[in-house]
Image (tube, helix red, strand yellow):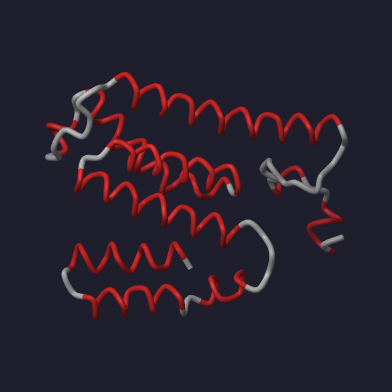
Length: 170
């Protein structure tokens, strides 16, 4: 609910139309995928909601230039990726614009400078990346050590399947 409320508030602030914001959020809420996963307890919906919160906080940071909003956006985005790897796409936008600003490429993107001090944001970005890589590396090692295939963390290509599995599905 927090992600939906922040998305409504962010869209309403940006478009200056609460009616359009209502219909945009309503469009998201009536998504069959969102409706299907909302009744199940899996990490897809919480990760999506936390990613939405992260994007809304980053948008607020871009508007107000308050560093705590950037750190909160980075924290929530990192938590979303730790829950579900597919949430890396919204966090990737945060990484892209932050790294473009830190390296001076923001001039080519046509955006204004985000950070006055470059060291602290750069360190927090590195810590976020290290946490994410460390967590997924640990999960892969855990699966290999315990011969556990419950957590599917790799790709299962069709060319490595036997013909029996391809034909019968068993």
